[in-house]
Image 1: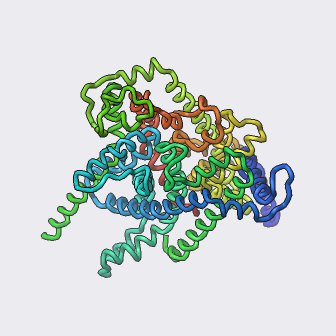
Image 2: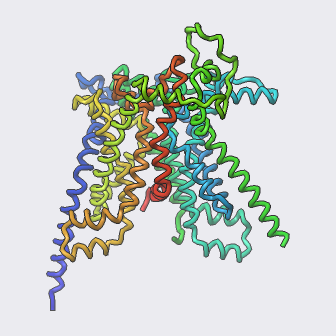
Length: 299
Length: 296
């Protein structure tokens, strides 16, 4: 008979060995991430509370207050927030609707999917020309509006500019999110839906009480993903309008670029930290909501 | 019977709507491609005024409104010939894009494979915390991560070189996250069986784990490639020298004089991603699907 104690210690040393050896696999990535992201981020935190990178005099929240009171930062933050608040829910809802529509037994399903996915593959820089042609003051969209008796709109130099941006954002991101939702929909347990149907549940009840709950973690993920992508919309703006866009298109990345150019580390650091805190709070809230809504599901 | 018929009509209408929307979605891409076969004078006549600058010497032939055309009046390859043979600037920028993107894709994938194996093989508390930190990092927008990246690049004295874009790109946690999620689905028993047969960790990684992840590697590679092929923020901040900028940034600086070439350049720039898409759509879709959720 073997001694159980000896067996266990043998197993423990075995696990410790795996632990040690597999840590080596982690090393390159962890070192790189620490060097390029984590350690400098600590320095960023440090810079955000001192008066300048040479004197290192502790000024506590002064830099934050400066950034917060900066008119350009406020404009940029406001515009980015406004854009995200409109574009993110819109793209989440539209892609979910689209995924449900494609879930029905329709012909040409995979071809339709491919077409919706294609905008994501095309570099923004390539299609920017077409958007300029479409939304130019004398462009196609305005011709269309005039045809129906409307007035021309100066799309890129008015408050309508954000609408163009939202359209571009939805166009670009819809396909990707649609795929995520399609995968999640196919994972909803069929038995539960069938039982509900037998119990004469109405379609909207099945949708609201069963399907959306099983989709809740995907909704969370798609929302977070779209949120991050909504911060990337600077690309489109930059390629469409250059360094100095119309006021309503001045985004946080524009603010950061200008601050990089002036090498104002204090402002830069404080702004980056404000943004990361806001991101963490938003994501945390989304997680809490999802946990509450999607709990006690049978997988 | 009646209900069934009603359902059929519903499906037909739904399909029609979906196909219509899908068509609208690809129109901008098709337009760009079709217009690349226009001669440069035709382009100037149709779209010249969008890019019209202060010098208005040759404005007479420009139409007073923008004409969007699907099919060129005269199919011509002159745009392509100019881009490919006569003005090397565009090809140079295309080459810049390649140089910036390919090493990132290859090395990010390599680093990520190793890390994902490390996260999969042993899941202790410390590792879970590190993994969680990776997720948080992954969720941070460029506006946040570019600041630390910039500082390091400055200290290492690699600003204004490709390294300033390569290195942060290579260590970006995105691929680690995706591959870990995939590898954790491989049954532990398979890896253990190899161990009992006497394989070391490196051998298990190389001969058991990697072959099982081939599909995942393809899809992650595609996702990284698209992401970096589109880059705009990083070069603007890291590379002051415009000669080093990739085509994605350079295309926006096309001015009135070169508008005739713009569509051809835009189309050439699309080609790599479209090829990747045509050959790897299934992988891409699979890759997107792994993400599923942030948990578990």
